[in-house]
Length: 622
Image 1 (cartoon, rainbow, N blue to C red):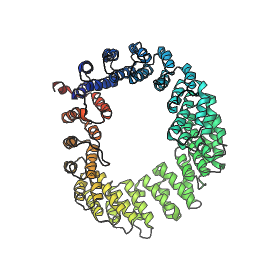
Image 2 (image 1 turned 120 degrees about the vertical axis):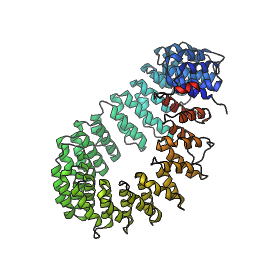
Image 3 (image 1 turned 135 degrees about the horizontal axis):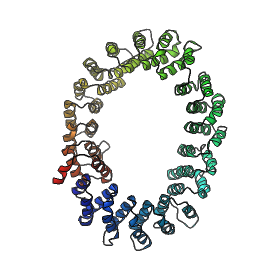
Image 4 (image 1 turned 30 degrees about the vertical axis):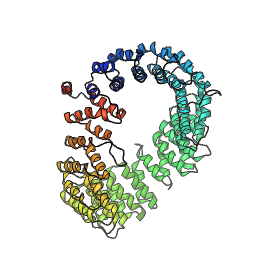
């Protein structure tokens, strides 16, 4: 396998433009090629002379010259403009180099390239990159020439890129063609991508003629196309009146998507029509979308309409969420509903107060816990957990320990206590680990994960080993991962369990503990024969961001990077090493760069380190 020299990565880390330029002129082919890529990323004007030399040298490899051309394009180097048209026009120029020259002309963005690129549309070898380059050039007068490519006699070009180019040009002459592409249904995924590109292009052209085809696309059976049309309508200045009319469309999905667009536009002029939709639309999904949109408008009439919608069982949750987002909402009016009407009315009032998070409503919620219907008590418990005041804790403790309460309610109370996270509830939560019902035990395990203490970690370890419910065991292991160092010995003991699933889960959770014992254990596991365990251990080490993980991560790079569904890619390991301003990690990156199968993925990591301002002067002596 041909490889560049490690010198390339070293020079890039030092931001040594002159050294990279020297490699382009005198280094081997692979090192010169990698150097050109790095110089393109750096976009340093000092490299322009070398790149121009490389582009003009007819004896150089055409791929290297093409990459130099693209690099000059990324740098917007106008001195390349006289050279590039000659490469484009000469039919003897290798195809790759001609295409690269066309791409570079678009990247440079010099208006003088317009004629060359328009002529290139008649050449089948470079027609496609010429379309893309014209889009980058952004000259509206190029649109008619691109539209002619749709006529018989021209080979079919990727429609997605044509649409993107027409959108970038912003010429209204393309609206009809883009609208036709948008409304032509196709099953092929590539054609779907083209229709989405057509919608985006219409949004960029941003004229009144673009609005009707986009609104029609809101009813498209392909969700991605409809979503692209919705996103385009958000950007069009004069779309709101048309969108208000679209709320009368016969298709519910069109009306729902229209509400979503109006939510992003936050247009007060649409408030009255959205209120009507919230109250009278036949579809519950549309009414819910209207509630969401009204939260963005936030007028006084909006608040009254949303409070009224709290009685609509199909949209009450959405209305409560919307009211929470409007500061002018009279909270006391909603709180009074805790003691009025049926359980549904009470549940929605409790949900709203919980979302509001104002402790002043805690006494009302505690009182309601004894008075509301059974169907509303779970919502009251959840709201008390969100508030977290002392009175809320007392009520929740009583609810969690009362044997007459159903298990689902006790589980919610335990969960709410976990949300509050007060150490004074540790004994209650430990006792809940022995509950007869798995839902209570699961919530208790999750809650104890927020209370780091040795008693909790020991108890969770026993649950992970012995509980009959696999969901509870998994919750216990995850809870151990979220605790402090007291959980590490317990997780280490789980590595000896006979269950492979439990061992893997424990290894993953050790990756949340920057502890000597955890790192040593994971380093050992990273050398196991089981690829699943190796993967879990290396992934855990990579996420720790601790310099003590550097040696095992470097050692893992010596293993052949062959594909496996459980393998951790060397790029992932190298990405983890780039977090450390440590000589060992940087040397490993430099050493492994030439051998990495995915240098395109690794190149940005090298560039990122070079821009961090680390003291890498020692690299000059290696």
